[in-house]
Length: 104
Image (cartoon, rainbow, N blue to C red):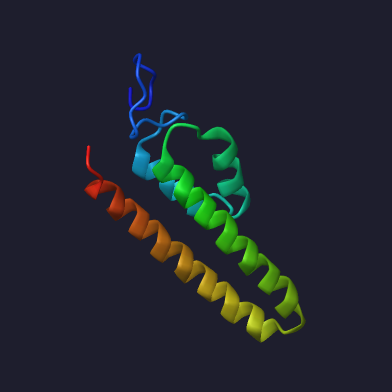
């Protein structure tokens, strides 16, 4: 089983037992920034997943603050929301593709 403990921990094993690429994608898809913070708490083995969880948590905390600041304008809120969806899709696609090129 991927991610299971077999006596040594490789940099590609994950604490949650999910595939590395799926778990890294969760950093962006699982209610950012809350899902990313949860991954930071639960994931201890994979630096790749932790990097993307940190990136997602920091980026989408700033985006959340922007949503609060721009909440007075429904138009700007919708534009920012569409930007959020595009950013989540782009980052998720990139992390899924980049996981394949890691040296194993």
